[in-house]
Length: 100
Image 1 (cartoon, helix red, strand yellow):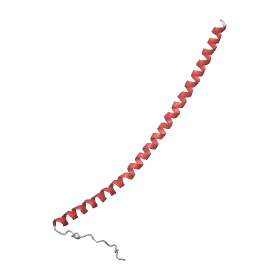
Image 2 (tube, helix red, strand yellow; image 1 turned 120 degrees about the vertical axis):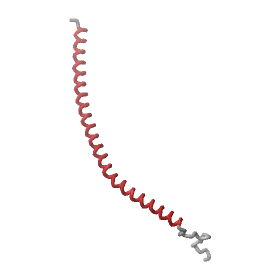
Image 3 (cartoon, one colour; image 1 turned 90 degrees about the vertical axis):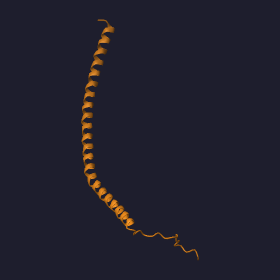
């Protein structure tokens, strides 16, 4: 074998070894990334469940408040129909006295 063939053979072998080592490291990196993404997914699921458990009572409270608001409108409408409205003052009265 000539010198250029020997140099080519050695460089091909070295490049093959380096490429194999890099490939193995990439496989380990992808496994670690898969594990990390799985943990993040579990955390997001836990947070989602917690927020859902917190939001259910809050929705009930908002529904009760909305019911009070609507019942106030119903009472106002009935009192308007019965003619028990509060009369509005004919003029605006200033409470501040400028005579000093």
